[in-house]
Length: 566
Image (cartoon, rainbow, N blue to C red; front, top):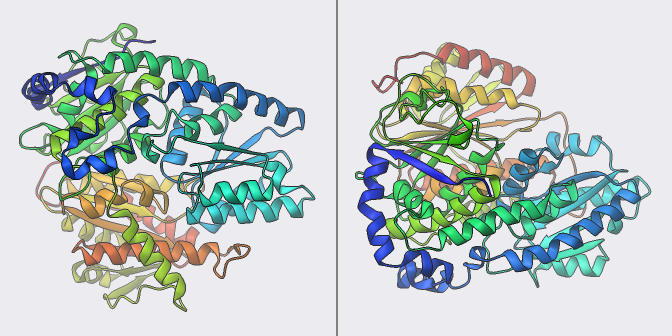
């Protein structure tokens, strides 16, 4: 196992000093290792009693390794060497990080955007195995992807059942369907592990093992780390991390995640779901904000920000720890309230799961439920039953070229002169002094990666943290925090028409209609909770994206729109 640890300064260090002795005296580490469901209070006990298997998944997970290796060899012998993973949230985020970090190709299909689905299909299916991954077995996105792939396999003259592998909970509708249809292989996972804590179970291992990842090394590092985390000791890095995340006073509830040569790829996006969905409820929680080193948030000294830097092992670095981020390759000045965290991927996966559970205890919430996620799903289903799939909102609107703008009057009025930069500036001004802006792009995340530069531009202009999520995948991630966390958010939706739409075999709606309903449903729920929502709808994708990028460049100022230097 590589070294695992963290270094803290400022309020992060003070939180560790304040909370860790109590956590040790309460035996939180050993009780969590023993899967004690009483750690989060009576209200959480029933749910927690069914959700603690992630603390010791190793015997079951190790038993899977030879089965996965054998299946990989069988597929390779048949010329099947492309792995497509259909899954959402915890079923896709951890495998994406594991495969990318270990350098093995894995196509992750976690979208209902018709262009993204169409592009994955257009790459061909003759050499492809589809891994369908859904804990509940009823995830609408995953079921829709299964249906279109089954049709594609059939159209290519292939037997669909021979090309589909399923990962699900025992007894789920997907398991029943898969066995009845004779799918290639069905892996059932431990039902006592929630989706976002499932990285080291079948959900994380099957797709990545089929892609070629060395699963034994991953599990070895994680299991060794579990032993460290199970000790009631003030040096326990899991207790320290949980205390720093949730124990600052006042609470620094935006965690600015930057990767500074950690060796992990995309880890922040996995941690984002784990932390936001676990803690964002009852009006509290901590919100991860995934950025690059040197982005505006990394040099902000705002009182509600805590810097989290994912770094290489200190023994492998030439420069010593510097709380401003300068020595780690970041800017020369920044917040002194910071954490540097290091360790191998397997170690970090279980470390952050453990620390998030500890943070839930400090915050006084249940880290294993997600009470506000279902509302958006229900709203989307209702809209799919409607004739036009639209939300019916009566909010004011205006049009600038290929961009239709709806939302609060101040934003719409800013667009009255035909200047999209003015619209983005107005959006930035809506963000309150202790708030955040969430950009939500319902487009092909593989085809329009350039849109992510809007995050930096709006962060610089607003002087506040900005998250960027691709729809609908963020609905299974930060969507819980948006509705259940502190009511500080402003939400910028980017939706788009498409020249391409795809039917979903056996369903009365298309992928485009499903995506439209998901965006409109989430917006409706956000508005019902009093959150401001701005929608920028692109009537022409290429022209609209180009216009937004141009406007974002114009909005990329250095003066905070709310009066704060970025």
